Length: 219
Image 1 (spheres, rainbow, N blue to C red):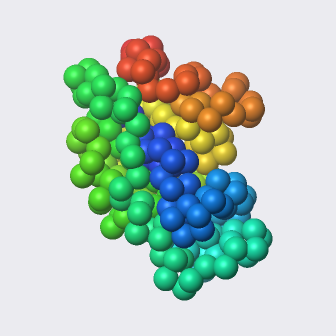
Image 2 (cartoon, helix red, strand yellow; image 1 turned 90 degrees about the horizontal axis):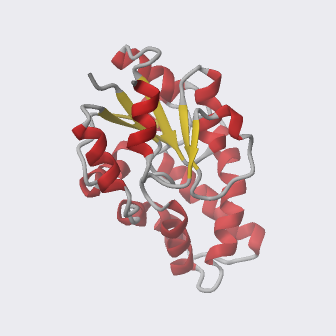
């Protein structure tokens, strides 16, 4: 009998780097990669601030701060560019075969994402497999690496040890908190990170071998 495989979305299923860089390039030609690097630094700070912000507001504020650090002037309308483009960010080519194989093996699929429901809705339509359950930041009013996404998933599914594996690209946002909760995490290390691999149950470079890894972890 199959279990649950939960995923981070942006970075794991969807090419976050390519999508956000293109969006930043559209508002600051020639500066997209620089702005993305700055954004990666400031986004966790914005997400940690209170009161809770919806992700579209995080995107706008993160872009605003990144542009200020880079000395880039933005038109007011440009601050909405990231949220407007997010539903069209490209899905990785290995997602369809991997999710299809997991479904064929009887597993259910969930997404635990730092996003708003309306933004994810556009992405969901483009994913090449059905998603059974979604937990967004807006649902729990918290952002990973906080534990609320994982705790809400556990409450909704009752999944216990041997019934649930989490797969994600981000060590910071996903692998580390999953480890803290005792949830086996497959680190999909698309970005060739330097963090401690021992916190993950397995490390793979992409989703090609994920179905085999999940089979070994869930039995």
